[in-house]
Length: 116
Image (cartoon, rainbow, N blue to C red):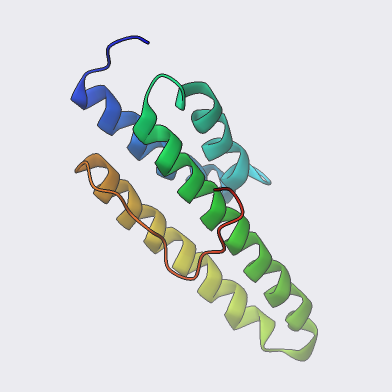
C-alpha cells in the first residue's frame, strides 16, 4: 500500500461527500460521484472507505425520500417536500465535507445503512 499524506487523505475524504453535489447538475450524479471516488480510493486510503460508504448511504436515502416526495406531488404536499429534501441534502453534504476535511468521522442523520 502506498503512503498517503494526511492532507491527501483529508482531501479525498472531503471529495467523497462533495462529489454528491454533481447530482444538482447530472442525473444520478449524487450517487455516481461518491461511488467513483469510493471505488478509486477505498483501498489506498482506508478513511475513504468509511466516508464513501456513509456518503453513498445518505445519497441513496435522499433518493428514496425524493421519490416519495415526487409521488406526493399529486396531492400537493410533495412540492415543499422536494424542496425540503434538496435543502436537507445540500446542508448535510456541506457539514459532512467540513467534518471529513477536519479529520473527523461523520454519521448522516436519517440515513439508511445499505452499504456496511
